[in-house]
Length: 248
Image (tube, rainbow, N blue to C red; front, side):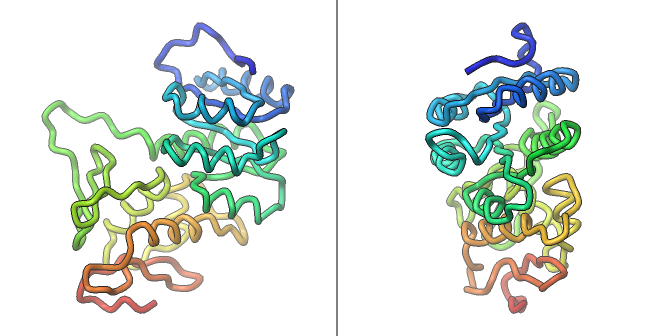
């Protein structure tokens, strides 16, 4: 275990936990992130990484799939059992199975190795934009979105369905907000990717589809039994309202 970057970084600096056994990569990434205003800490042990990730001392985790001992998927599964901290997975280039499994387990996004540090910073910032609520004026009422039995409190980043809390990841929350704002209208996959992931979709990129599938399962059907979020193949997704057709 080691600390990469300045140990005297102020608390306002965004703290990132890198879980990877490549010491050289940790050093290079740490130096680059430090120049961009981040403080990086590296952890090589997956079990220790779980405890550190859920302790509340970091704002984001960068997690490699290939770890000695416990693999990255098991680490992610354990983190998600008790924390919604954003997780960016590092996968082998071209390994679509790893990417999909990571997303299904609750990763917010992925990046293939080897990667450009500039892209890593861009991905980190895009995910963080979706997890850090905008500062509001004291006493200002939090903005809310309501469609049928689902209420989204944008200020406190809470989702309720029929009064019961629904636990969503940062990306799922961003997707739900985009879809509910456009309820009754189709939102294109590319627009969802730019809005929720902060990037364009790559060819054959199924990230949005996996995130929407997870969110759809968590929300369940509409109060009238209809499908809440319908798919328009090769186009996008539609958030429906009770009483409207739900076939897609």
